[in-house]
Length: 335
Image (cartoon, rainbow, N blue to C red; front, side, top):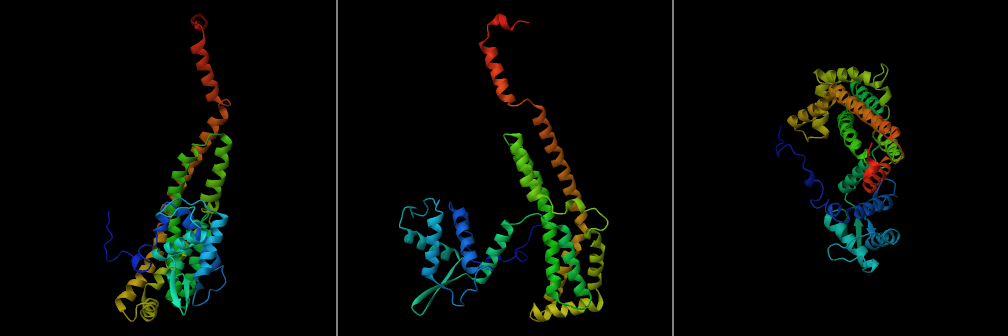
């Protein structure tokens, strides 16, 4: 097994505060998460009005927390702060917890305390929200997007930003396909615990077909599916990795990303091209996913078949029969 060295480990906690996940690892993690999402929607996220450059008055933020607590307040005792404390005291304590963890930043401007969410923290929260809302993976759309972005680069717009975005999409696609297999395997034992056939069928369609199943899975192996364009993508990657296109892209990275460092520019380009080349392995991921889905389908059909063939409430009938046998006279049991 390859071990990642400290020099190659992404420096997460040099980008976000070290205690950022503290509230989300506490007993009230679900409540803290709900508050963060609501504040993000109302004050700091892309759907909120553009925030003032100097931030919001602290009282405006704590008043919003009080409002959230009034509508939904399933909090537990934590850190000596009893849930029956005055609402404003609790709201200020929650604000201070977010501030100490790094989710919020407070600065004095004149006579007022102003609150902002640091940009990198807001980006992290946006990523977490997107992750929690993740639905079916549409492979065709992702492959088409990667191809179109590479075409822009190959046709003369030697912009490393576009190349990086295509590489990141390719990486996310492979990660999504890999995690899909694990989710399918983990889901079946959980579904098998359903108490009734109707409950199993409902969860099967809601959680497996509706949430985990790839959005365009049925078309993945058609000749005209964008997956068939993988060879075109790999050909463009090969084209960009040689001669004048490579030199132009290295120059772009050197100027815009690495501050004139030639070696780092070369590494940055090689990283993006390497991620795009990983699409060559996509058949391995899809083959494994195919097998996992076939096994899941077989298990689901076998489960439904056994449930439908079995008499209704068979366990109840068996218990009654056993009680009858135990209480019956000995002569009545002779054949």
